[in-house]
Image 1 (cartoon, rainbow, N blue to C red):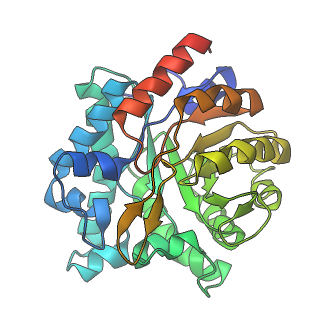
Image 2 (cartoon, rainbow, N blue to C red):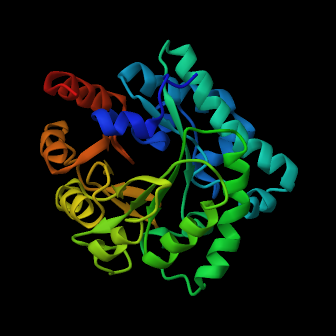
Length: 303
């Protein structure tokens, strides 16, 4: 069960800790994620591995668990011969797996259902470029059915994450309007711009007046880029800021491998908090040990 208050209420009172990268924890557990469905494949083939990965983060101190639905789409499942009813059940099951993990770890955790970008379904790295040649309306039509499937499982929030450009952000915000679930909007940034090259201040401003949006920010970006993005998000919207960068390594989409070394430093959390961050954690290649370190930093700094 989730804690006895909403995630939005918790953000108004202090900092809340997210989990880290689900894929790297699954790989650490011996899972093969080379499939185009990435971690979403395991919702069908090995759901116990998904639950185990969530449990590792809950035990590390994470207060919010993000589901394995980032790359889960009706189109992607359809290519594997999984029909719409079964696909919808698998998406809802991603929320249930995170709920069970919190219980196994003996923690009351909020669950955020991941809604990844259109490019994640293509599995070609285009979620880091955006500008797919689709209209906002077409992107909205793509996202709405999966949003409905995830919302039906009653998550505590929807994580509209790794969004590469303003067009897709607008489409996602339209797609969630009819569902009474809080959302956060998180871009993947490079410097002070979206991956598609738009100014972050403009991108964040899109959500400024939307009550359903409880936080705005960035994820799956270089930790150094996250520092400035937190300040921009706070100034552009006045909302709590969400920040969960990756390790600092670079993803080679063609070679399907990470390159470089980690620059993720849990000590950054103090600067993020001072700039307005209230929902903090890690993304790709940030594991339970780093989340435990963040938990220790947050405990030392107080609410």
